[in-house]
Image (tube, rainbow, N blue to C red; front, side):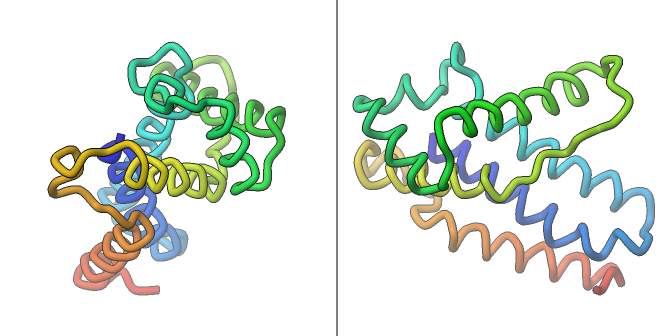
Length: 165
């Protein structure tokens, strides 16, 4: 679970580091790479938080599901209904535009601040209460720090390619 959270954080950091640079214009390579970062972030988010029947779904990992869900919703400031709607939004993007190109004409990229807050909460809970020392060897124990590091790394790469803000 920590690995999925780290993948999400890295990809959203890379995406956010590049999006402002590429709005003006940029080589198609970087525009495509940047879009792939957000797509991967959505896929990685859905594994632990959007796939109720999936092996990695949070309720299959956390023992106190009602306590966790209540604390998570409080942390991100959403009701259960709002979070369910957000899950639908994330899954629709994943299912209708990433996995299949369905009949929808407008691609609605989810706003990822909520997703990031949920992943940070989930990651912290796993690291503090669930993971054994060997489970997280080599993985980030502070997801916010990992995000910052990845954002800075991407900034250096974009700057080095002449894509400055």
